[in-house]
Image (tube, rainbow over the protein chains, first blue to last red):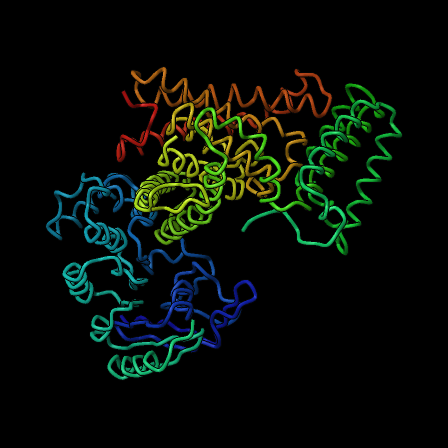
Length: 232
Length: 205
Length: 183
C-alpha cells in the first residue's frame, strides 16, 4: 500500500505572520523525519496533515483524502502523537484510554473493550488494562498514548517530538519499537541519532524547506548552519 | 496581557484612578436619585460624548454592550408589558448610561493603577493575615496561570479531536484539572525554593 | 495564609477564567451554556468553603480591575452594573456555600455530597444573587426576574451533575486534591 502525502503550493498564515511559505512535497517514504529550530513551522506543517490546521492556500492530500473536514474525519487514516502524555491522556485507566478511539470509530462498548484487550495482550501488557494512567512512568504513559492511537489502525502515524521528555534508555526502546511498525511514520524530533535511522529527512527553517534528502546529508548541513550562528 | 484598557492620550486617561472611581459612584447615585427623565437623557449624551474624547474610533467602543442587546430587548419588552413604555425607556437609559460610564473608567485606567487605588481599602485584610503585597502577588500568579491553562486545554482538545472525539468535550475538564493541580504543586515548590513570597523590597535571602 | 494556599487560590481563579474563554455551547433548550460556573462550583468542592470564597473573590476582583475574563470576553466595571451583574457578584458566595454544604455531607457518597453542594451553591445561591441583581438593575419585580432567568436553569443543572462527575474522577486520581472530602 503506497501511502502518499502530497503538499502542493502550501501557504499558511497565522495572525498576519507567514508560518509556511510555498511548501511542495511528496512524501512516499516509510519513515520521514522533520527537523528545524523552534518557530520553523514544523509543528504547523504536521498539523496540516491531519486537519488540525487548515492551509491558507494550497493543497494537502493524504492517501487520496483531503483533511478539509477536520481532524475527526482524518482520525481513521492518520494518528497523531503529541509531545506531552499528560496533555493527551484523558481517561483514568489504560483500557478506557484505548477504547476511546475505537468507540469514536463506531464500535460498541463491548467490541471496543475486546479489541483494546486484544491489543494489550499482543504486547504482553494485558495486566495494564485496569491500571490508572497516572500511576505509570513518563515512558509508560507515552507508550499508552501511542497504543491508544495504534489501536485505531491508522495508515500514517505523525509524531511531534514524542520522546523529548523521556530518558535515554526509554527513548531508545520506544524508538526501536516505532521503527518496526507497519505504518508510515512522520516524526518531528531534535534527536539526531534517531533521525539518522529514517529514510528521508526534511529540514524546515522559517517556514521553508531548507534541506530535503538522506538524513546524513541533511543533518550535516543542519549542524553546519547551527554552528555558524544562532539568532534569537 | 489581556486587559480592556486602551492606551490613548485623553483627559480621562490623565485623571487619577481613585478620582474616577469616586466619580463613578457619585454619578451612579445621582442617576438613580434624580428621577426626572431628562436627567437620564442628559447623562447619556454626556457619557456618549466622553467616548468621543477617546479619539478616533472612540464611538466604536460603545459596542461593548453588543452581547447584551438580546437581553436588553427582552427586558424592554417585559418592562413595557408589565409597566409602561416610559418606565421601560427610563430603565434602559439608566442602564446604558451606567454600563457605558463604568466601562469608560475601565477603558481609561490601567489595571495596576486601579489596583493601587484600591489597595488602601484592602489593608484591613492584614488582620486576617493577608497583606496587600501578597494580594498583588496572587493577582500576578492568577494572570500568569490563565494562558498556561488555556494551552493545556488546547493541547487536550487537539488530542481529543485527533482520535475522533465527539461532543462529550466536558470530559477534558478532568485531565485539565489534574494537570492544573500538579502545576500548582510545582509552583508552590518553586516558590518555597526561592524563600516564598516576600515584600518587594525585601531580598529573598 | 500560607504561600501554597495562595497558589491554589490563584489557580482556581485561573481555571474559572480559562473555562470562561471557551465559547458557549449550544444546548437543547436553545440557550447557549458556558463552562464558567462549572469552575465556580469546582472551586468550592475542591478548595473548600473559605479558600473557594477567596479564590472567587480574587476572580471578581481581577475582572473589576479590567481583565476580560467573564464568558464572552467581558470584564471591567461595566459588568457590575449590567443586568447579569448579580450572577458574577454571586460567584464567591456560590463557591462558599458549595464548599460548605459538600463538606457538611462529607460522610455521604462523593457524588451525592458534591452534587447537593453544587446545586445549593451553584444554583440556589447563585440564582438568588442573579435574580436579585436583575431585579435591582432592571426594576422588575422578583417574580418576573425569576421567570426570565429560569431559561438558564436546565444548562446549569447539567453543570451541577458534571461538577460531581469531575470531582469524583479527580478524587480517584488525587484524593488529597478534594478539600471537602478530607477528614
